[in-house]
Image 1: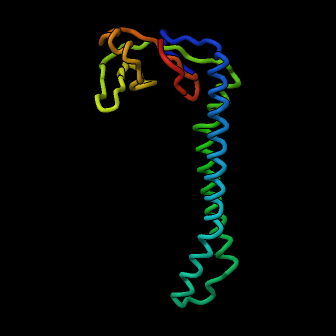
Image 2 (image 1 turned 45 degrees about the vertical axis):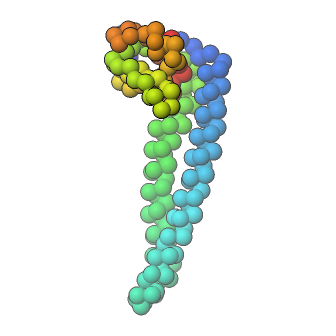
Image 3 (image 1 turned 45 degrees about the horizontal axis):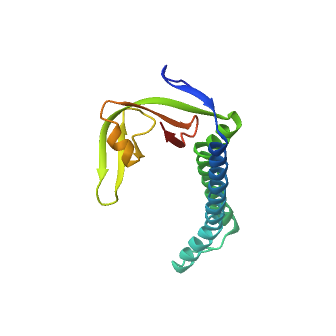
Amino acid sequence: MAQASNQYREPLQEDERAFLHRRIQQDSALFLKVLKIVMVFCFLLPFAMAWGTAFQGKPNPFSFERYFIGVGVLLSITALSAAAAYRSNLYLLRRDVKENLKTIEPCIIIRKYEMNVTGKYFFYLATRTRLSIEVTAEDFNTFEVGDEINIEYASYSKSYFGYF
């Protein structure tokens, strides 16, 4: 992984490691739940399409060949999609836990923003990793546009841990 010269890595702290473990558990459960629902549709959709063909009066609408080809195509699409989703999220989280490293990156504040309705404060940063971060009111009043702060995030999944 290419890094800018101003970034550096440190070992994860226990609370950050626990945060990543919780994310893995939550995301794995959601991933499996969605996968189960999609799998049900992979088997039901070809059957529903056969009923549509039957209502049109076409011969042999409930063909085993058509059904299993439809299921096979849908399962293939699901498998490719699931692999891509796993690789883009869960794999990166597991890699972060395995390597036990976080990235610390100095960033320049390019804009300050206060949401009056919710009472939340944000810094917009000059970095490709994170567009903005939520900060405390004290830090919002302490730091000015152009000041440098450091953000901490997981090296591969880019899960944000905090700033200092």
